[in-house]
Image (cartoon, rainbow over all chains, first blue to last red; front, side, top):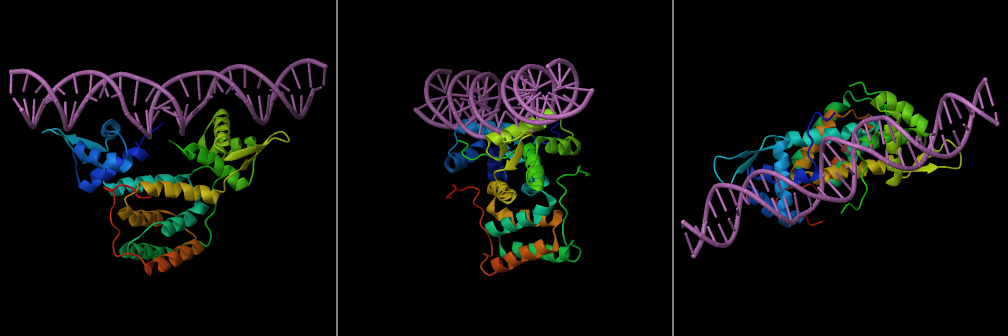
Length: 140
Length: 140
DNA sequence: CTTTTAGGTTTACAATTGTAATCTTTCTCA
DNA sequence: TGAGAAAGATTACAATTGTAAACCTAAAAG
């Protein structure tokens, strides 16, 4: 039934550390998350193991302590997960959901420009209204 | 540990029907989702029950069949759930996540304008760069 | 070398989720 | 009014997730 692995909320926290550091020992991850999330070391170790099983992380075991490296880029993980969430939403509501995100997120000047660029492009061909398909069978 | 109820992916599908119809009997929900999701009636009944337990739905039991009504608006459910997802993300990445969503979502003319409006407003005070806080303790 | 210890592995356990069968009660039609 | 159908309730069961303790093994320190 489940074909594609997803990252749980707790697992995300672990990946964020490793993405940010590029690669990391378990100790580094534990140090950050014990403070940041108030988790026990054992909890964090479990998450690292699960991430390996899900193929989001691999350990370089040539020397000890192991060095954990991401097998998925942060960007693609983000894209997968936001798209996954948006798949739940009524088509008609996606626009306002994005608006909510723009309102509540801090965004850099350059990201703002980038988003506006895309919007301007979209404007050329965007429909007047997007139809709700909540009562219909998924086509895709 | 869990203070706030969240809606699972499957439960979302049920709520979408009921939001779209305004209110609904179980039969209506079942009819749609049997087709759309290929779920069994019993599955859908379970979801309805869980949504009641989570206080997302209530049944008007004054007559039979019961009429199920949402206890949360679609908009606030959406806001909660997108914000919840964005809480996982590195601050620095939120801009590009939004860009991805804009690129992959169909958005109406008026939503596009609305979003651009907000962006223009943000532009006035937006930072040059948003700092990554992945290694720091959450303040909020 | 041996003892401590840090890092890695195994086991645990309750809650949530996906997925549904079965049982029970209430309508409805003959 | 009795039987069958529809709606609602109860029970089930495996996978995932949050959360961690306990255990084992390699490395460091004395």
